[in-house]
Image (tube, rainbow, N blue to C red):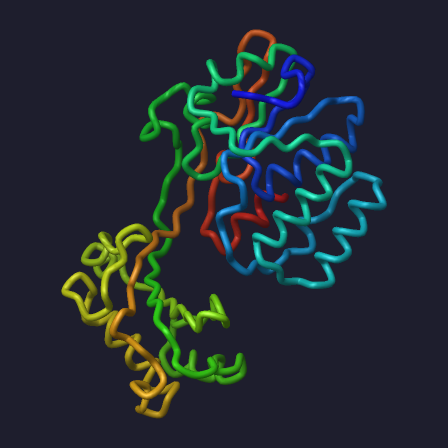
Length: 298
């Protein structure tokens, strides 16, 4: 690993550079200005692009900083923001307060890869749900790192192309009452890609669990449960007054499934010689995505 600074000068290391890591690093730097804080992030840009409802209470902080207060007030007033925009805003603020962000650095073996940082007494694992740092803190294989794991819900997403302008939010709300659990989300106005999300049963998930983000399945394939397909089509027929074929191209429409899990790591802190390792965010515990980032901020 090549650095533009002296690794032995770093006091605190964050492994992972998502919103929770940035939020925690900013507050750490403001509380301890003399500390040299480094964030190691393997990606050039934040990977998730979702819209998030901001829980104002999750932004409460004891730090007194005009820069931070301005960002907090902006977020509280907007209420919603894309996770990518949030990450960018926090990254800009982190660098303004003196946090160093080093991208394109992936930690595979914490003991070996963090060795150059001889002065660092605290390492914070903020590397997400599939955390490498969690394995190191718990000192067990990934399948034995969690003390609680529970599947709370299952969801299926249908992604398709709309030939004309998507319906408005008001129309969407009235349509949801027609079908029940469907949630209609616009992911890209530019590409006209739209995603229709619905909760599914455990039985439907078992039939469709091979429909993942990496291996999506065509909506008309045998891999998609018939009852879920019917729910999608019912929604589309209601939306377009039974003429959805004129407005929607389902020829390449794909379905993916996701489990909404709740879990917590068996250990959150590990003391090793003169260094303390701890976990935050999804590395420490997770709840369904709709709440996880706000909980990470708390």
